[in-house]
Image (cartoon, rainbow, N blue to C red; front, side, top):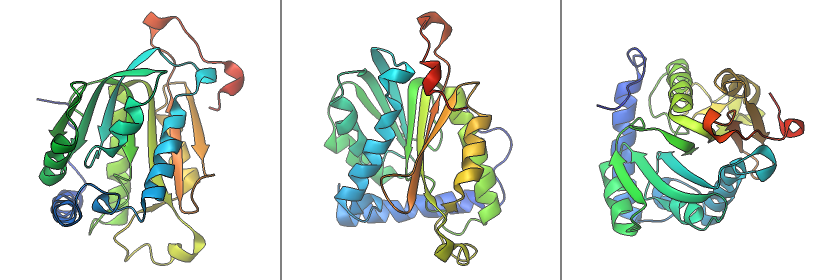
Length: 242
């Protein structure tokens, strides 16, 4: 058995997750392995989000030579191509998790690299050096907004326990024009300051960097943990933002 979230899920979340899995089963079956197949507006938007996530690998902050990766909400595995192209760190293993059975099946068809595995699950089942979450928390279906926030806080904490070096998560943010629609929308728009505080609460004494310079309605949290004790390496303290 893999690690479970602590305590029961907030009341409206289980049915929302079932709806989300069903929605993305249908979308990927209709649109195939493409940016629209995982709900992005364009390939360019998907790529910009990936490039922001990969800024977790900043040599000035200290990174290992090789790394294992988990990808929660991996879709058809598009992030793997970006990770596989890296030379520092060199990615030695990648596990993609998704609650959509059709997404996992598509990922397995698209990727045959022996370093990769794809698992149908809503939580990571094993530890990794780095964790990535791209768009996974943006669609809340019919979940109550406060329930969804509670669910996300528990997921941030769980992911932090699973990752040794760092965690990169993107979220939609809350432009003023959308705040009034928050109660009825099926998308989750996050307050940047609020979720920066959540990220700092799980960073284990490391640092949190917030990126807002790549898309108008998106932000990325780069959560860097202190290097594991066995490495004996430390990030440049002038680059830390706690």
